Length: 490
Image 1 (cartoon, one colour):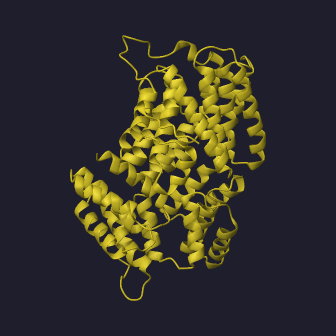
Image 2: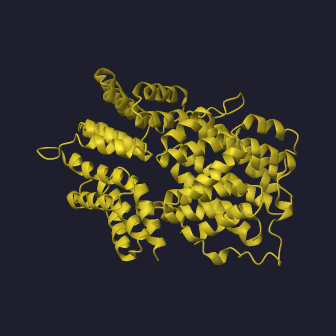
C-alpha cells in the first residue's frame, strides 16, 4: 500500500473571488434533494425519503441524500440487523455513481462521501480493516475532486474533516496510519473546513458545526461553538440534531441547567428518529444534581430503547453510581454486575467502567460526589464536599491522586487559577508512573494555562508530559488533545 500524503499541493488553492466563482453551480443539489437533506439534518429520514420520491432516482444528489438518510438512521439506532442491508444498498449506489453520465463534481463527491459512510459504519460495527480501506479510498477520491474542482466547497468540507482527524490521531494509532498509508494535517484540515464554513454551499451548516466542535474540543474555544449552535437551534427549533448538539455542548462545558432545559424542550413530534443517547446524557446531568432516582430512570430508558453495543457498560456504571450514592446497596451490586456482561469497550467511557469492575477497588463516596458536582459545573458545592475528605493513612494511591486533582478542577472552574496550578502540580508530583488519568489530565490543563499565559516552553513541557504518560483510562483522547496543542505552539 503506497503512501499518498495529503500535502496542500495536492489540492489547488482557492484564488481571489474575482478570478473564479465561489460555488460550482453544476455541483449543487437539486431542489428536492436540498429539501430532503434539510429533513435529514432534523433527524427525520422518513420525510426525507418521501421528498426524494419526486426526484430522479439516478441523480447524484438523490443518491447522496438517500445515503445520508440511511447512514444517519444506522449510526443513531446502532442496530446491527440493519448493517448488512445498509452495506449492500450502499454498494449498489456506488455502482450507479460509477456508471453515471452526469457531469460536474457531484457524482465523484457523492461516491467519496458514501464510501466514507461505509468506512464509519464498518468501524462502528467492528470491521476495522475494511473500514480503514474504505477510508483510504474515500480520502483519495476527495483529494481528486478538490484538485479537479477547487471551488467545490462540499469536498473541501469532507476532505478537511478527514485531514484533521487523521492528523489528530494519537501515537497509539500509528498502526492505523500505517494501514491507511496516509498522513493527515490538522492545519490543512482546518483551512478546508473553514472555507466550507465561511462560503455559501449546500453543506455550509454542517461545515460550520464541525469546525465549531473541533475548535471547542481541541482548541479550548467554546464561545464560538456555543454561538454557532445556539444560533442554529434558535433558527430551527424543530431541528432535533441541533438541539442534541446544543445539549452535548452545554454538558461538556459544565452548563447543567442549560443542557437540561434544552433536553426538556427538544422536539418530540412524530417523524423524528428516536435518539436514546439523549436519555443517557440526561442521566449524567441528573447525577450531577444529585437526583439519583431520576438519573436511574433516564439510564434505564436509554438501555430499553438503545440497540447498540457502545455506552452500555457506561450506563451500567452510572446506574451503579445512582444506586450506591442513594444508599441502595442491593441495586448498586446488581448494576455493578451488569458492567461485565454489557456491551463492548471500544469507547473510553466503557473502558473506564470495565476497569472499575475489574479492579474491584471501592470508590470513595466524597471524591465521587465531588467529581459529579465538578462535571456539572457546581464548583463551590464540590469544594464544600471535598472538605469532608481526610487525606492520609492507608488510602489507595488512586484516592491520594484524585483528591488534589478534584480540588484543582474546582478552583479552575471558579477562575482561581493560582490555586488550580498548585493542586495540578501536586497531582503530577504525587503520581509518578501511576496508571491513572489524574496526572496526565493535570499536565494537559497546566499546558493550557501556560499557553494562555504565553509561557510557550513550559506549556510544551506539560503537553509532552501528558503524551508520555503510561496507559490510562482516557489516554487516546488526552493524547490527541496534547498532540494538537503541541502542534499549535509551533
